[in-house]
Amino acid sequence: MQLAESTVERIIAEILAQGQAAAEAVARARPATDPALIPVGVSNRHIHLSRPDMDALFGPGAALTRKKAMKQPGQYAAEETVILRGSKGEIGKVRVLGPLRAETQVEISVADGFVLGVRAPLRLSGRLDGSPGIEVIGPQGSVIKDYGVIVALRHIHMPPEVASGLGLVNGEQIDVEVDGPRGGIMRGVAVRAAENSALEMHIDIEEANAFGLKNDDLVRIRKA
Amino acid sequence: MQLAESTVERIIAEILAQGQAAAEAVARARPATDPALIPVGVSNRHIHLSRPDMDALFGPGAALTRKKAMKQPGQYAAEETVILRGSKGEIGKVRVLGPLRAETQVEISVADGFVLGVRAPLRLSGRLDGSPGIEVIGPQGSVIKDYGVIVALRHIHMPPEVASGLGLVNGEQIDVEVDGPRGGIMRGVAVRAAENSALEMHIDIEEANAFGLKNDDLVRIRKA
Image 1 (cartoon, rainbow over the protein chains, first blue to last red):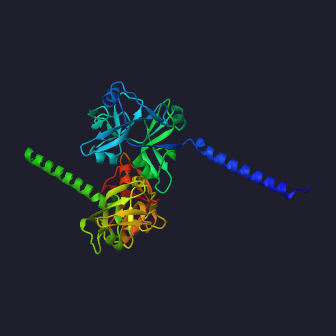
Image 2 (cartoon, rainbow over the protein chains, first blue to last red):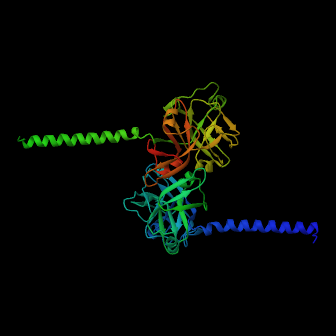
Image 3 (tube, helix red, strand yellow):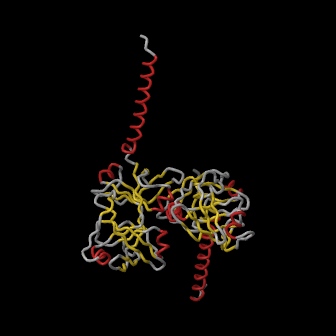
C-alpha cells in the first residue's frame, strides 16, 4: 500500500498533537495524584475583628465589605483596613479578614514586630494567652487591645478525610519539603484538620521569600 | 573518724559548686569543640561601591567613614548611606559597606525587590552578569547602574583550614540545620573558603526571621 505524502504528514501531526495533549494531561493530573503535594498560600499582615471592635473602629453596626474570597471556605479579604500603632511605629493599610470572630487577632511578621516595637510570639491562630497588645486605629475610632498580636505558626489546612488519607491527625506537627534554589525543610508545621476546609499550607511573607515560594507553589509533606 | 556536721556541709557545698562550674565550662566550650556549629550573621540591604560611583555619589576623592567593623576581616559598615530608586519605589538609608570594590553591587531582600520593582536574581557576591540595574542616589549626585542588583545566596565564610577540617571545598553547596520552633534545613548553602576570613554564615533578614535566627545564633553544617 502506498500513502500520499500529505496523508503521512497529517498522521504524524495527529500523533504529535495527541502526545502533547497526553503530556499536558499528565502534568495537570500530577498534583491531584500525589496527595503529599500541598499548594501554598502566602499571608501578609492582617487582622480579624470581633463585633465590639468592628463597632468601635468602623461605627456601630458596620459590616465588612467582601473584596476577595480566600481559599478557605467562607473566609474573605475585606475592603476595610486599619492602622496598627505600637511603641516604636505604625503600619497602615492592614487588611481586615472576614467574617468577624469571637476575638480580635492581629497577625504580623517578625519584621513587622520590629517596626511596631511588639515582640509577638509564634502561635497557632486562636492561641492568644499571654500575647502582647497593640493600638488599632480605624476611620471611626480606635481600640487599645491588651493582647492578641501573634506571628502565625505555619500550618496546613485540610479536610479530615485528607488528613486520614495522609496518616495525619489534627494538631500534630510535621515536616514540609521545599524545592528550588532556596529550598529545604520546614519543621514544626501544624496540621489543622477540619470540616469545610481546603487543602492549603499557610506561611507568612518572610517564610515565602526565604524559601523562594509564592501563592499556589507546591510543597511536599514529610512525616517528621 | 567523725566529721562535724558543719564540715560535711562545707564539703557538699564545695562539691556542688565545682559541679556547677564544670557544667558551665562544658557549656561554654561546646561551640568551640564542635566544628560543625557555625555562628550566623544577618545582612540587611546594603551596597558596595566602586571608586567611580563613590566619586559620583559622595564627591570626587571622597572616602568612606568607618562606623562598625564587620566580622569578616577588613570589612566594615560605613557611616555613609544611599537611596535606591526603582521603577516602583524607593528605599532610603541603605548602608554602604567598605572598603570600595572593583564593581558596585547592591544586595537586597526579595521583599525589597517588590518595593523597588526590581526582580533581583539569587546570586553569590560578585556574580552580577545579567542582573538588573537601579538608580543610586547620594548626597552629591546619582548614578544609574545597568546591572548589579542581587539577592545574596546564603553562604558560609570560613578559612581554608576550617573547610578542609570539615571535609568541604570552596564553592560546594551544603545543607545547614536550624533548631527552634521555626527550625528546619536550608539547602544550597554555598561554602566560601578563603584566607583572611572568619567562620560565619551569612543570611538575609527574611531568612533569619523565617528560621527564627538572629546574629550569633548557632546553626549546624550537614553534608548535602
